[in-house]
Length: 295
Image (cartoon, rainbow, N blue to C red; front, side, top):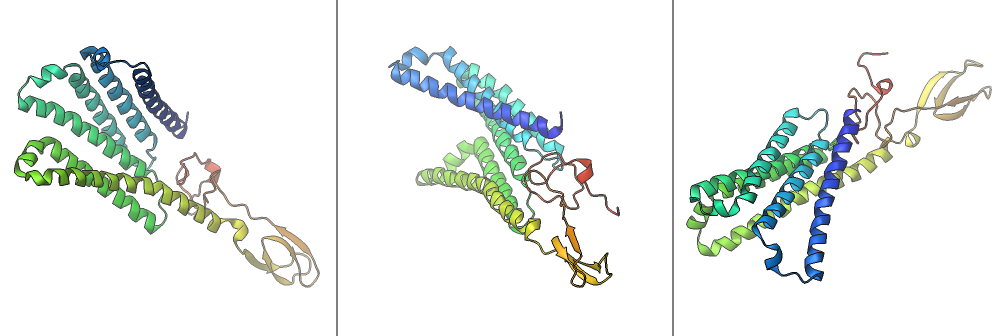
């Protein structure tokens, strides 16, 4: 199995896991609502621990798998490794918090801060690294796309680091900030999150629009190919273009077909040296690769 096919399989598993989690939530809400079940029935320590663990495991696994599946061959492998490690830490610490929630609440503030801070920090790193891999998977052949890609990554890191600082110093922030600024801080964080995620979603939309424009621009049928060489019949110098041609002197007919190496997605593979398509990540056969210096 090729790397691209394996990554697509990981993506399918990640999306399916996320869909199963949402389906479970929808079924649970429907049963509780339609069945008129009281909160006392399902808000037991065991049920809540199982529910927290289920959401933690399925949510983390889906984000990690989807994030790793977008990693391109030219992206640093360490990013994917850090993503998996952050997800592992999140699952381990989050499971401890889920099953010993009441016992942790009785511990000192320092113990609670370390546990909750580690869990939230690892979770934030999972989201940041997944976003970085996703943004880096976009082929950005134009300066506009490259600028949008850098801005989305920088803004997401700024938002993530801000949340991490607040996770560890939330008590100091609440203590030193005036009471009237607490609401503004909350609203500012929401707007910051909306901006970070909006830039991330804008990147594939801009990428798709630019891709369509490049395909139209790179379409070989829209180009004017012209070659000048003597007519094979009468040696009269003529300008020959792609398609059907006739010699101006003797009427000799010549058909010229232009065969450009293209991926199934339409991306022009001219002078491509890497084994995958920069546009969609599909495998490129060796016959379509360009060797520098080759005739």
